Amino acid sequence: MLMARQAPVMAQEVAGYLDLGRARLPILTLTPPAPVSEMPHVFLHGGAWCMGSSRSALGLLRRMAHQCRRPIVSLDYPLAPEHPYPEAIDTTARAFSILADSSGIAGVIASSAGGHVALAALMRLARSAPSNGPKAVLLWNPALALHADSWTHDAFGVGFGLTTDQMIEAYGLYGVPTDDLHRDITEMDLSGLPPVWIACGDRDPLLADSLRVFESLTRTEATAHLAIIPQAVHGFMNQWFDDTRSDAAVTHALDWLEMRCNQNPEPIR
Image 1 (cartoon, rainbow, N blue to C red):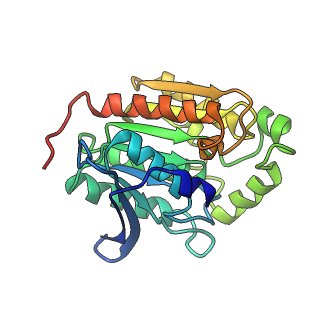
Image 2: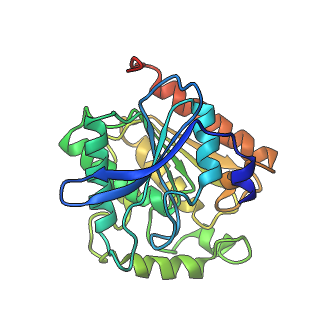
């Protein structure tokens, strides 16, 4: 709550629904004062696929909307285990398609488990409507491999905030079959994605996920950037309000995101 109170004041924060046809998806839309664009970034929260909501990172959302000077639409994608895999990805892919056809999508920002949902949904969008997706993607400490077999889990899986045991439990609740296509995004062909910025702490058990997906992206024609934040743990970006290193990392990533989105600026409606 402290982070939310210290965040910039928005002109509007509207809780509503996105009509998906057979269902309605809860969303939160934050609009900063004097936006320079009406085309939003879309945000997917973290929470191990089974926790969190569109308001989970409220302070960070306000911080991002203020710097980017455009709306941010935060999605309440379906959570496991009540809504098992692949419902979150199916719903998010549908939401991306509808938003792309209506307001358009400037960028997609996703955190932790939301990174897996976002990339899997974006890969579907890239294959079905390659010209209709976002202009760039920003991933905060994404969870992408869906297993704990990595040196960063061995090194940072205990005593650095997020634990390996917590992630193993989350993988089980998410419920992705062992032979599923999207189980390990780091091993997939990621061609067709827009430019991607990945930011992860150097003491995060999920760091190996970021390293591996960055390596996969470099094998394609995609533009990819990797920022490893020194002395930072999982969720470092949520400490922007009292940690200068985290705040600088957030600023740098959002500057890049806006640069990519403004290369072909759209008129304000």
